[in-house]
Length: 413
Image (tube, rainbow, N blue to C red; front, side):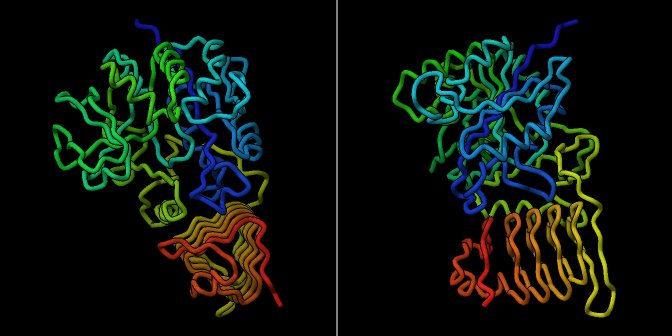
């Protein structure tokens, strides 16, 4: 019987997330709440742990306090078995500088790889929403003898200018070129109308990864995994693509199999939430065979009160988290995070409310994201008149989503 390889996972969680402002004004992108009770980092960590890999380091940097706290509270593995999830901040081991890119983050943390002495290193991003069994990708990596395997998702060739794109040989696996947002992409051998887009997830042979980041550290580059490390290994003929369409997760359905969303913008963040709310959701949080793990605190059950004519507390096509009270208000097609309170005669439509948001009486919300702890005063209307929202100093996205940042205080005069 062949022994299993020793696997270390590195989660790249130092991203600033400028395109998610104001949600990232006070937290790192991987710590942004999602889906009611989760943080974005929970999806990466759950996928890795469910895949059977329980030695994990999380490289953090930007405004990492809430991220470090969440990981330490929610991700306690069996330490007597040698299992761990360890946040590692930028330590300036290689000089007096912070991480200058994802490859530099690994370079500055090489001691963690040396100490663990793995055969394989799985490197994943911390800000995507998806389910994936990484053990299948590792099996292909070993089978091909690759130094680097890149997770690839099929996308229409017309969308190539939005992704890092892999061009592959006739076998559909060996990467012949890795190009960033090409205007003249080559289609896949078996599907000329499609391209392989990088998902930002990688499997490396440990020595190859260490050698690659050391070479990169000597160069004038962006020190980026996708932009520098992968092209280097492609040039050496040792990089292969893994087709995400081949990945099968227990409990997945035909509807949600292959779901992957990069929630790097406010619009994509909002759209990914709306994917959760339908009767048969595009991404199903209720797959108990491949759970998304987290810690959502000591909240009581959700409660709905009042049923007097127009003063009726209810929610439909919505995710309602623990600790929510819907008191005589109506919620439709929305996501309510723990501790949200919706007061009487208010309407919440197509919206995302983060922890502790208080919605005053007669408030009307339409296509709104509200960050933690904000009080929405009685009679407020948001998302109906974008000029009025902007006049309040609120951010409105190109698609018309109004965003209320953490700590915002409305003028109630």
